[in-house]
Length: 335
Image: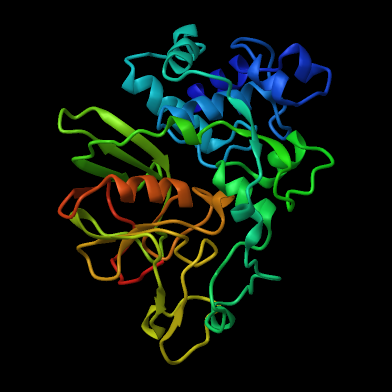
């Protein structure tokens, strides 16, 4: 894994436009495969293009932020393995070619903000504590910009960078976005694997081919995910979160159960896939930038858009297999 990460960082780099300090639609659409090593903490045109191509191919890199982090590297590795590509000192040029061949059209496109994007209602502030969330009518977005960023699988930082001077709160305004929405096709998912060690979720078709891949947050040492094989029992696009004091989450002092209404900023995000172990599920998150970087309360977290795609393409009874040894003992939680 270390050799893979090192090789990818060496091989994906700055285009001439990026070297000049310009990150715009043209620089990203024209970005090419081999170049120089990108700075790991800066948005890079080649990496933005790479992430969008991976997202289109259903090897989701997590939040599209233009930075070559762990989630993008996991998606790269999975895509290469699924396409029979091996790594030596650097990824083969065929990897970039395969990604380009998997979809068509510009990776950055113009989008005219619609009335629905700015209508709201929006939260003035998202409470930090769960107890204060229970009084809200909905766990909505906090701004049109947050809603638009999630709609196109992007970080707010990248959305701002591509659209200097834009307010994001006026219908009719044209902005540059990741061109990912027109490339979604239904998937025939017959089995899901959750890898606890690698923090990933992989969906397979009946022929055992990978049809979708997701970076994930899978449990913690205090509240591990279950082991063995479970099944999908439900799929809910507007999940209500129910807190049980028996969960004893850190920072939650409630002694009686309470309910948090649905919304993208709910503790379980905007989608819930129920599993056959009581209280466990695969679900979204209000913090897509933290996928794979922070522990969950026992369930499997994906980005909201990843959880939605998976939930819309699985059926009741779909097997969900947890691989690798569980961490610690199992406890019943739901988040």
